[in-house]
Image 1 (cartoon, rainbow, N blue to C red):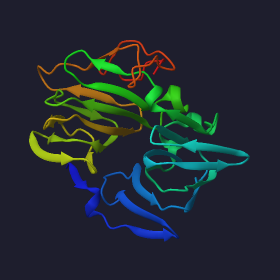
Image 2 (cartoon, rainbow, N blue to C red; image 1 turned 45 degrees about the horizontal axis):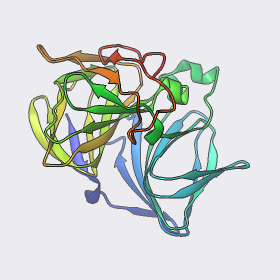
Image 3 (cartoon, rainbow, N blue to C red; image 1 turned 45 degrees about the vertical axis):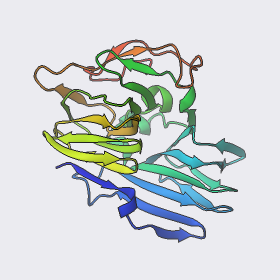
Image 4 (cartoon, rainbow, N blue to C red; image 1 turned 90 degrees about the vertical axis):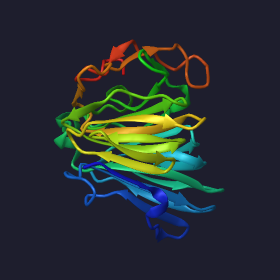
Length: 279
């Protein structure tokens, strides 16, 4: 069954000086426990060490503030525009002068979903999503920006995208086979349907759909709604409800800021089982 709740209802635990963690998606919430999601708040002058087991991988997105991620001899400056892939065996320290908030997804025993991880382990990757290609839906006003793909991160264990719904936009009813699926609402509000039952959603909500559960969303109010969504594994099948328009994504030739994007993605359909090679 679908699960939805707001981050404000989840108790924060102090795991280090100036570091709070909220466990948003846990093994108790999901059927298979393939992916977990935490929210971290690191106060001004605080730091946190991220250590990834050699069998796992992780992904983080800065929601607010800025930080530096030190790993080895490299220091990466992170802002709200950055998404980071942490490969198996990664170790690094995130430090902030003024404070930072982020969401953090972990995939355990990731080789279950991508056997190539044991042969060619992926490397640390950092992406500025505001420079990535923005795609338009051919059937409605939605926009898509990919944030976790084989092209970006070198693995099919996880797939993710940011979806933007202008006011009043609604998607087609569908379900997925072969992957757990969750969404984190970044801004705005709307209605999410699970097996045709409506659920009100707003910024800070986590929405979890189990395998085979029909779902779609509609934005409400006068402002746009945006969320990031993840699939584990990143290779799955999408089944559309009878008569529903199959999502097809068309390149706009620009990023969300209106500038030329750092790469190109061709037109493609969400009916495809695998991600296109350029995604």
